[in-house]
Length: 386
Image (cartoon, rainbow, N blue to C red; front, side):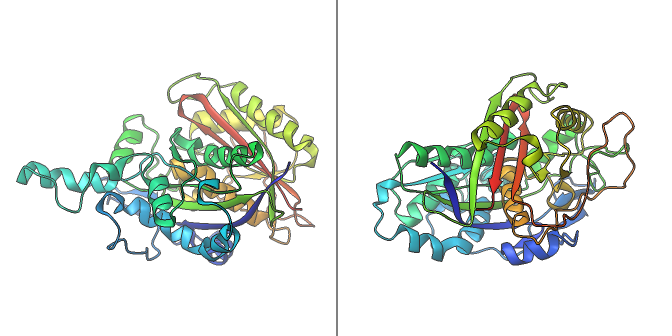
C-alpha cells in the first residue's frame, strides 16, 4: 500500500508558503536568517526567524494561544481548502492529527514567569497547557472538530519526521483514512541557552561540512502535510527509524543507527542507493554530526547530489524533519534544481568529499531526507514523484 502527500504547507525563515519558499530556496536567499541578540542578550548570534505575519488567535481558548500554535496555523491555512475537500464525507474519528515539537509554548512561558514572580500570579493570557508537547496537535484537532488519534511527538530533531512516519503507519494499518502530520518549533531563550551550554551554537552563519564549521544556528518554523491512501502529488515511498541510544547529545561516530534507518527506508521503497537522486542531509554544521553523516553517506555508496539546507532555515529542532521533508517535496517539482549547499566551500580534508551538485539535467524522481536526534534517534524518509 502506498501513502501519498495530497498537499503540504510550510512557514520558515525562507518565507511563507510553497511559492515564496521555492523562490528563495533555489536562489539561496533566506529573509529570516540574521544575527540578533533577541534570545541571547548581549551576545548576537545567527538565528532563523519567521518574519512573515502570523494569524491571530484572539478568539481561541487561552490554553491554545501560543506563538507555536500561530506558526502551526500559518502552515495549516495553506492547506485548509484541500483538507476540507478531502475530509468531506470522512468520519471525524477516522482523521488523525500528529504533530512533532520540541519547544511547544515555552517562549510564552518565558514571558509569563517574570510576571508571576512580580505579581504572585500568572497573567490571564497564560495557561500551562500552552507548553505541553501535545498542545499543537490538540489545538488543531479541536479547531477542526477531529476525533481520531491526536498526539504530539517529541524526540528532539526527529520529532516531525516521526510524526509523518506515524501518520503513514496509521493509514497503512487502516485505522484512519486521512492524516494531518508535521511539526512546529519556536525560538526561545531556553533552547538557545541549552545549546550554548554544550558549546554547539555558532555566532556566525552555520557552515555544514566545512573545515571551518563551528556549530548550529537555531531556527523556527512549521510544515504540515495531508496524508492519504488516495494517489497524490508525492508518495512516501519508504521510511526507516532506529534508536541506538549512543549518547545523550553526540551521535555514534560510525553512524550505525543512521545506517539502520536508511537501509530500512531503502528496503521499504524497494530502492538501491543509485536510484536516489538527492539527499537532504541533517547537516547541522557541528563537528561530530557532519563527520558521522558524511562518512555514513560515503560508506553506504551514495554518489548522488546532497546538501544541507540549515544555513537557509536554521536548525528548527522538532520541526526540522517536516520542514526538510517539504523542501524535499519541492525538489521533486523543481525542473532539476536542487536545494543549494550554502557554505564557505572550504572542504574538511578529514571528511569524504560529497557531491554538492546544484542542478540535475532532469527533475529528480526519488529523494531522501535524513534526520538524527539527541539520544541516538534516527529517521530516514524517501519521497517519490509518481
